[in-house]
Image (spheres, rainbow, N blue to C red):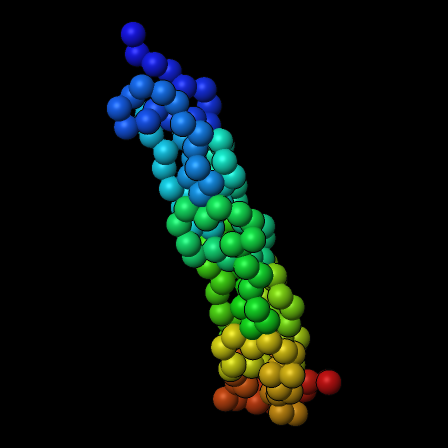
Length: 151
């Protein structure tokens, strides 16, 4: 008869007995254990991997603990269920660790700085020029005749 293992266990190499699934691996069936993918971790005897929290990153395979999910540093952010921190895009800033989305520079400012950790990189547009929220540069042309920007 074929030996069957409970959830979170797998057969040893010679199929004689069940072994607990190791940390960093999951056992979806009793035949094998599989390394947890990047952005996840697993505890012993689980049949699934656990996603890292929002705003953290884990680029390792087979991670054994939530401690491997590191917070993104200022200037970077991590989307939901992402495996790596991304640079804060132009026109935005990311001032806090563990951010899940970048903050756009306010209207009438712009920033051409990638991975900005501070709103200080959002520079004011010159008088007579309109910069929309999240602008990455000041427009080349001023406001049209008969219009103005009121800062």
